[in-house]
Image 1: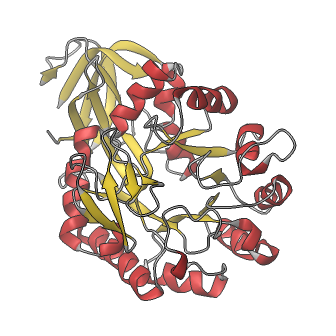
Image 2: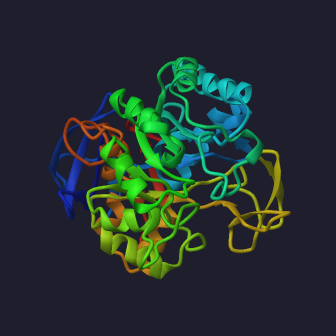
Image 3: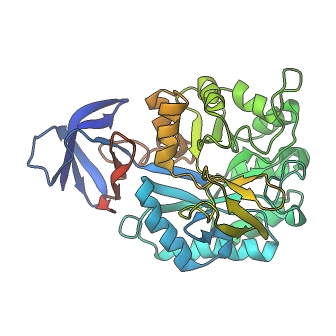
Length: 382
């Protein structure tokens, strides 16, 4: 199959090009119109497929529900926003619930065919239960426990090794034991839901932490005398850092500051989306045993406490927000949902950019950032 456009994102620029796709991979990149194309997208933008490393669910499904068809339906529908790969993300819950949740992801992954069935389930993001009470956010307090290497091993065994990413509060990780264990066993450690001081957080990085979870939110804030976890994210330019780009969790100005600090190579756009994504304002759902409601701006809030519980953002909308509202350069914005998360997960040898030999995970974008078509492993989804 050959597809082409006069604007294909290659080597940090849009160029006229034609892509030869076979067996789910980009076999060759040719000059525009070199062969008769099966699909000519004119001057629409073809960019790498989007990767969301922090998303709990959508369309009425949550990772913790452990329902195989719910996970499959999510993976199919998420391609409508250009996502071609994601980490199914847990929330803090009781141990039996989390064990069942990660087993479900492992079971579905075994039989799942990425591309034919939608976006690739790249693994699991284990958010909690090793969090701080002060900055627990919407995570249920009753299930928060101290970090434990032995307990994490149980979760990873149940997951069949699919936990690729963990969010924890390092100030409660005695001797940074779990941080070191995870980093030594190929699991990305991200600092989040944490009241760590700057000094505690930088020691976590020294012991293997590689990222900060949803920067600005659910963490010790930046102050010019107490720099906190947010200060760490902004100060350490080589540290990967997530950020929710719905312009509700952080203002456009804060997003601009974030990307000015991180540059184009270390920012990670996330949706932090809940099962409420895909529904309308006013709808209510249960999240971690707590009732949440979708507000008119698309944000999700706890009904009782009123605080933010997550988002309903689509990744293509986040990309538009960064470029048009936060005035982030396009390359930095696009990298944050393509090559940067691929590099963080160690998957950049076949994901995250348009290059011969890479998976044919592609998004065709209209100028208004709506998705014209998504290809997962070369298979058209829409």
